Length: 346
Length: 80
Image (cartoon, rainbow over all chains, first blue to last red; front, side, top):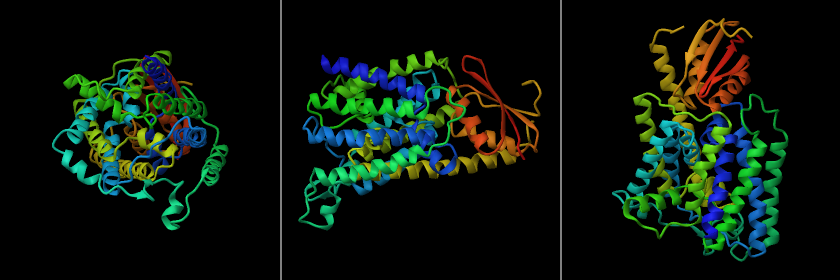
């Protein structure tokens, strides 16, 4: 019962923050290469700057025992690339698609159906053998999950980093992020929360994800892929085994995002063209396919896994970013060609 | 500002990023310095991102006006 209530409340706050802050990591990843405004990147980095030391502290005092996503080169690369390409076609990241669906954007609702379907194909369907193959070999460091904390052990076998060393690694990363954030220009044309408010609230929600999950002996934090699969399994087969805190988080996220859209006057049913809907569906399928191959999405890897400096998560997130950049390049090219072949409509 | 005077109009209802920004930039490319483009978007995020992106490209944002639920008008002057 504690799990349900804490999950629903944290999810509500999380959904509210994602919506009010426009925390779409697809936009963040794209903006790194293609835009001059990096507000959402800053919000994401602030989430990491809060979570990296917080998780180290929680681990040191024995409140959580963070697991790291396995580092599988092929699964992370292919899964991440396909997930990234799918995000551009679907018009949002995994969490972004949930909060946009919650404000009545039909394209995102359709993309979510694709996301669930793509996940089924990869975890239970025809692509299951591919997943099993691609996830091997996992690359550990000295028998442990690979992270930036134990990376030196890979080069100096006798060196096992303690918390002192880990704090130095975390400190260097956090200081680098903070220096970057302090140089942020003034944010203009902001509708909703400024990036730093979004970053702080999502950061605290992410810590809650780790803490509340640990109460039910799950050594991981926020995730979108896993609860989506749990809900799909329950809806299609009546399975309840995979339902955990993150499922209630995701269930709470939807009314939270709905409430924020209502508060911000952004709640209305929007229907794009049939062609765009089909594109969103295809993108959603690619997202579910890719994220389940990679073992996580922009939240499971990009926020939760990166907060414990998992090399597998950093690899999958970097692959996702590459996928976004490649597809965005193609979208620019195709849209420009289409515009060039039509007479001006001014 | 007088939003009724514009040289070109672009309706991006039903579109999300990156299409909103890409199409806005392409529409502006067809104009010359000083001409005004009126863009319609249907969600808060695009209503923030489009003027932000165009302004950082050097164009002048004349107005971002909410016309009702799910409808925004962004008016932008080509900077040349």
